[in-house]
Amino acid sequence: MAAALAVLAVLAVSSCSGGGNPVAAPQDTTTPAPTVLPTTPAPVTTTPPARTATPTPSAVPTRPVKVPATDGDVDGDGKRDQVTIATAPNGDGIWGVTIKLSALGTRRGQVHAESERPRLVGVVDADGDGFGEVFLAIGQGASTAFWGVLRFVDGVVREVTLSGQPLQLAIGGSVNHGDGFACREEVKANRGRELVVYSGDTFDGVTWEGTVKTYTWSRGTVVGLRERTETFPVGAAGDDPRLRPYYDADCGSLAA
Image (cartoon, rainbow, N blue to C red; front, side, top):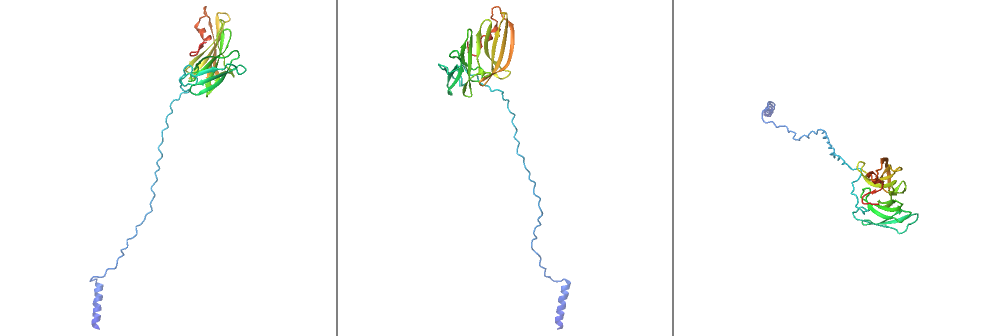
């Protein structure tokens, strides 16, 4: 009994003194979960679409540049067209006119001519727009001829009017009176060719008193632009060059 107690005493002393190899306490080997910190979303960078430079508009002429039609060409295709006048009026002095266009087929129009059957004078591009105007002799006085004009507008042959009435151009005259017209190029206003009508008289055989009216071509009409008067002495032989516009048709190949 005494021996057993002694052994227990020895073991107790050894335990208290730290001697020997004590059994290590088991350690926790679990890997701790990582700490998740709140994340701030990266700012979204929006790239604006590239700006397209607006092109500078090129200069546009106020009036299209066109090549004047050649003589005889009504529809502007470069070929002569055939103009035929009816053999009898339709009524009230209205005559049918048929134009056989080389590019667009046949078109029909009409012209007023009360005294006689119209006669084709010529086809010239009076306004320089690329389409030829049809000039027809529609009357004849003692010393003055009268002409009418047809135009090809939007595929239709139209009789040109002035203030709602068929246009009549007078050419010629006597010693004391003269009428004429001209197709003049108007560059500054960019309107192409204008129609200039001359009419004048001398009441004493010494001084000429003239009126000059300028018109612009507008579809199936002519519209007045301006008017002026002029006075000058008449030469002794009556051959002053200033008188010539008052008796002639100065428009391309047209001849009275």
